[in-house]
Amino acid sequence: MAGFSFATFWYSGVEFAKIMSWMFFTLNLLISVNFSVLARDWPDLVTHWVQLEQSLPDHPRLSASYRRNTLQIALITIVLLTSALIEHVLSKPAGLHRAYRCPIPNLIEAHYKQAFPEMFSFVPYSPYIGFAAQTVTSLLTMYWNYVDLFLIAVSVCLRTNLRHVNEVIVCSAKHYHRPTFWRDQCAHYRRVLELIRHVNRHIGAFIVISYSSNLFFICIQLVNVFQQSPSLIVTTYFWYSLAHLIGRIVAVSLYGSAIHDEYGRTRSILCALPTDCGYLEEVQRFQRRVRHDSVALTGYGFFHLTRKLILKIAATVVTYELVLTQVNEAEAKNGDDNPCT
Image 1 (cartoon, one colour):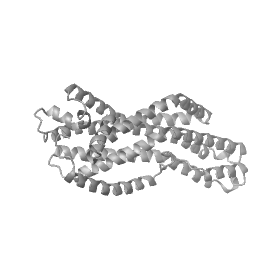
Image 2: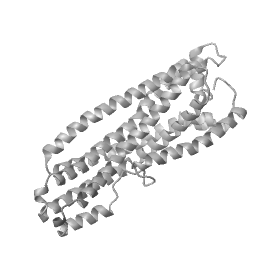
Image 3: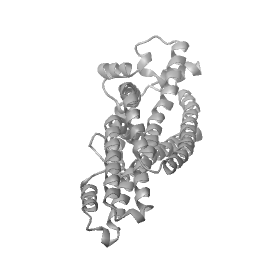
Image 4: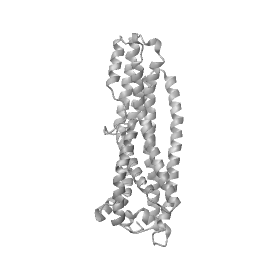
């Protein structure tokens, strides 16, 4: 499907209205490739993760945290995928409503040709081909949402390990004057930090794909909601889709930035230690390490998942929305007027 879209650009030129299909299918193609690459390294990654958890102290507390994580991730899964299903279901009547503008008598044929104009520009129309393309698109819609769910789940679990180190320090005040205690906690912190960076190297591509795709389609849906539509169904779909996309990117940002927030808590805990602990060389070494570390998930180093990122995203959306609005207005005057595409 991405190939059909690219071939359309090659023969008829790039149009804003037709770039959505290419973007959607290309992003899903990249997701498939990256998950295939991750699958080869996943057993070693999980083995490393399990070994880290087994090396951490106070296993009953850590086990209780992971039981809470199980419920939290299950709830997030239900909410996110249910919202994605509602958004996809709303797109169907909205698509059929737009198909009424097409002069083709058969409404299903008009819908398929309007939904997949790039494919049917090269392949003769067949309802079976249209149904297959529609099925693939529906599956890819859920698959696309799964990327955000995957990032949220990984972020929740990584944060739990760092939080566990913090909780052990907070609850062990009677051991503060033992140098061996601080050597052990520094070693635990270092191993957790190495795990976060190790995992981040494997999921960096998914972070870039998640943010780029969500930002792109948020801008697209903002253009759509600003245009007046005579149909309540179409308007409802555009607004719900926009809210769903915003909710996805905010959720990924908040759960991803929670790792950086927990690192900030580590710094606060060490800075709030009793003054009579400050003379210990192990404490000073631990404080220097934490002070010079930077703990946060990144999209290949291009950006860090912190709370400030949400404000940067809002500013970026406003900037690109102005550009897309102008491009869309220009193409509305000079673009393709065929109601079947």
